[in-house]
Image 1 (cartoon, one colour):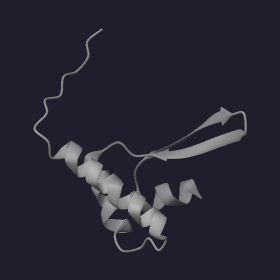
Image 2 (cartoon, helix red, strand yellow; image 1 turned 180 degrees about the horizontal axis):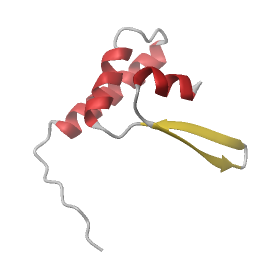
Image 3 (tube, helix red, strand yellow; image 1 turned 120 degrees about the vertical axis):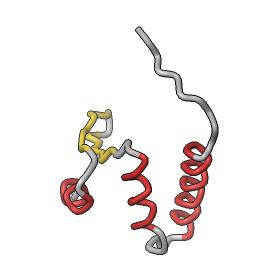
Length: 77
């Protein structure tokens, strides 16, 4: 399913980690532009009240982080 999602959007990477409860797969997206595309896609499509609240909270954090004036310093070494 994650491969189909990645192929639909055309970006992101799929990886897994082995946990005591079994293998956990994830689709990771780290690019701001791609994250905005996911937000636009999900907008108005989430039916569960709980998931909608989580999505709204995630959007708030995303926008707060990327609209801030903080300086980004790359770690050396």
